[in-house]
Length: 200
Image (cartoon, rainbow, N blue to C red; front, side):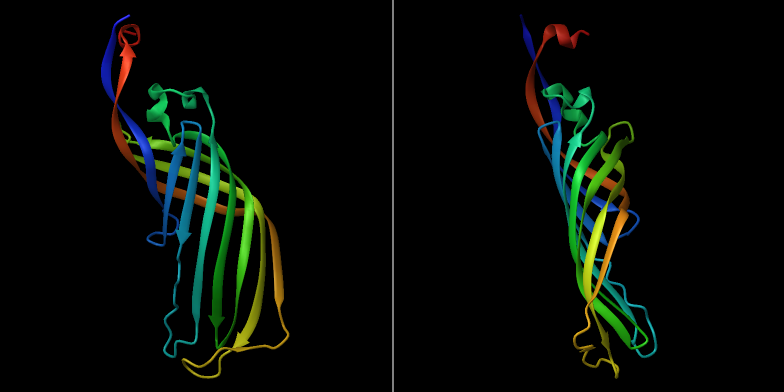
């Protein structure tokens, strides 16, 4: 049977940002075959509320990681399905860890937190060529946190922690949502295709 050469695009990784936090997030996702992918994201929404004496601020920084399984027959093995990588419906296991410091009117609290959950995502191509994707995702799981309250008595002064006082916080339910713009990075590869498949 005669075979013919054809060039096909293979997604090797993708860059993304959550549009719900514009310019405050960057992430990368790497396909592992056609069916699986691994992603990491860095969030840095460090926002200072402007006041005349700078006594209030909001600081938050965290990282997330996930392993994702893509659903549907169009993610089965084979070069003919390379074009479907990181598209369609998927479920994933999600984890996150971060740091925060919230202050208002010369008093606040700072601490660290961790989170874990199950994530559902749908990704669709933008435009006919699919040079960009749009992702919608929602994560359910648990968050746990420990923080220490503090006081500040002068502008730019030292944070005075309240000795012996540690607060804990836990939450179970929706923990993350996103509408993300994704830019896939492709590599063109030469594949051999049967004449029969090319004429179908």
